[in-house]
Amino acid sequence: MEGTVSIENLWMFIKSMSLSADNQRWLADRLIESSMEKNSSVQPYTIEELNRRIDKAEQSIANGRVISHAEVMNRMNEFIKRHS
Image (tube, rainbow, N blue to C red; front, side):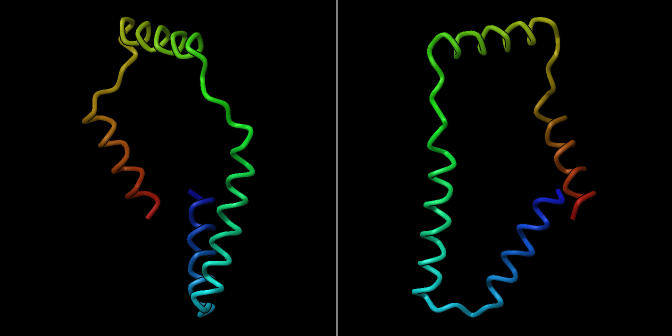
């Protein structure tokens, strides 16, 4: 959550700067370009990799290593309460 707080603080700082629409677009373009560069090394999974991941997930389910939707929601709500 610490990283999120830092990003939120950065966002509040940027909003406090009263940037013109042109400057906001310039900043947005730079952020998008930067994120695209960082994501350029991301490759899609091969069919074999996907099948291995599916097999592993199915094995986990068969072995009872699952969490219900309700439990996931409870955990998320507790996390949000602790960090807000």
